[in-house]
Image (cartoon, rainbow over all chains, first blue to last red; front, side, top):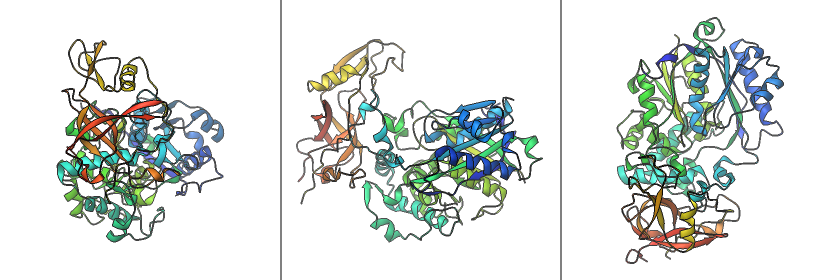
Length: 392
Length: 148
């Protein structure tokens, strides 16, 4: 039995809830917990469950205070409360954490929730908020003021090794924007041309403005329960087919030390996750109908497509240039406009879109989508991935 | 006009150390670049950590490095994200592979060098820069590489 096999199809996402996603600062004067609670209430309502049925919380990136949420929402007993370590790397894996709790019998109905408000702290400048630490002293003087500056170093190396070009990054930005146009959830709905892309200010070469994700506020929650209970609820269940988190030692601290071996420096750090995810799954990359790929930066979409085996290492640029990730391509990617153009809730919108695709209710529906891949953010360990399956 | 790589903005850098990293910074303060090598198996390890990831031994020798290396990757920062840092544009965060057979990279900056000469593989030489109350190692393109 492969590692990870034990959760396969034994749990399902039965409820989906979200606040409107708005530009940074515009969620005020709502509080962060208020946003989280609104998403949780919406997810419970969507599932046809009273919010009091929730008995577990699974998080990533620091999570929320389960005690405060339980008190606020009148949830009578919390039986599971856990957070993946690390930062945005854990978004997809938090669903697997919820599944593990349910399969182990520790809780029955677990909510995965994340709320983001960037009024005080722009995530684009997050490293400037880190306290001085012995590890941090090895990069904090260098003016790498945002994650996009750090990942630019990986992108530059990928260009050097494989001939990847800014045109390839542009194709990611343009195809993602094309999916956001008219999308009811998306923040950036105006068309973008190749000329617009190349006219945008360069921020940290090779990343220009449109290679960066949005800075937005909002919250998304999903409710996970056992497959048996899921089939009695009002929504078509979306099965948690496979989930993995962690990663290889070689990836380790990744952008916070940049010591990765040459084979993995110009990558997303997801290769080990992809192997485990597919090993525990009925499908490999050829069986994925749509991929919701963590797009904090356009270059990292290309590097993840390689790590998840949709193309060979180094071929990610030509792969996207072929039109493969467009809605009419072989692998529709970030069909809701992703984080580059739709909205950024630390990876949670990717989970939402995968659920909508597998329910058959997506705004840009991929016909007959049965398997959807969701990835967590390339970052320091853990990184994570998730394959969801429709129950049709 | 030749554009020169500036120093990055100092956004409140405060050096923090522990017993494992302090010798690196103490050497840098005296303008020496050093790295810790496991006394048991001979592997270098950076950043300095309490255990050797190859043999789990703890003790290290601090070895002097030549202070030269090559650019492994870099980014030219062309826009000030933080208010008040416009005067530092352009500056160049970089990862430099250090010479001396140590297999170590540093996250650093390329400074005082023409932007046009900055490329992956370009040889660089250490300089020691005061930042706040600390000294940090940065690099400039080595002589002969400084096309203007």
